[in-house]
Length: 423
Image (tube, rainbow, N blue to C red; front, side, top):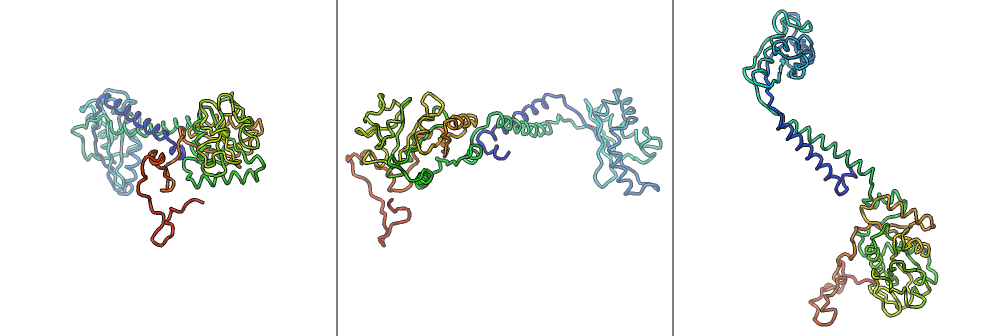
């Protein structure tokens, strides 16, 4: 239950339910007619046959007995010209702890009714001939008879009850929503029900991205003459931009890696020859489609954002494909590559992930790894060090002089912490 509360929106649902039910209770209580309560105070009197301790214990018994006793109800009902059942709803008795005091309360529709009901209740218990045989003669004395009643609509207690009921209703609603439409919230949950490693891409630093790529190399083993090929596939339709962003950022982390984005319906096979490029240098007839994130250079067809711009062979090719099971045939790309990685957005339905994994299972290309991203993540995180920060367009184009540089070395000639250049 605590994990459900940490998910976005669930706590808000519970709060909204609590507030809504509390407001409803407030308006209902405010619309009700005012009730009046009068209190009569009696005491269980010690006697030669009843010690003070016994009187205290007897007062506890009387407090439970009086509202339920039929003879007392009938006597008060006759005095109030109502029914015994109505008296049972209006009458209550309370014992002060560790004392022999009895507080007899009667609620009425008017102050006069409340005072008369409290009077009739206490007087029916006193004297040598009480109305109930369950009350010992002369065991109850009068301490105070009410002269007035207090008015109340019980708004405060109604609101408190409404808040408690609203919290319970909200918790049940959240539980029903989670059971009926479970969604992926974090990597641990995704890894649990799919059964393969998951990396949260949003929180990965550049060092973490390089470590992730190195781990994939270890899983794939020594590359052959075609190098290693990784298929990056979205878990559902509509995530092509996120997948291309992941592919670009992964390729930028390694000097011998390149990223490639397939256009809609584009056949991936021509890109998987010995040079990691199309056999005829032309790619698809539509140039990779309008959604292709690659800006081609000459005949290489490689991403200009990668560190190696088509010079020589890429030992790692990261191919951004399309969702399996659709018209674009993402499962075909998965069968041609050495490693299949599924890009999963947060808050995706589990049923969608299960369906995609099921399609890949049918073709023997079950995902080896999963990447969890935020929906709409299409740009890299800001640079962390001065050496990573890109120059402004004017400086890059040679139209302006760069500003003062950040010194990388200290007075002793050594690199400052965090300023070591990359190897």
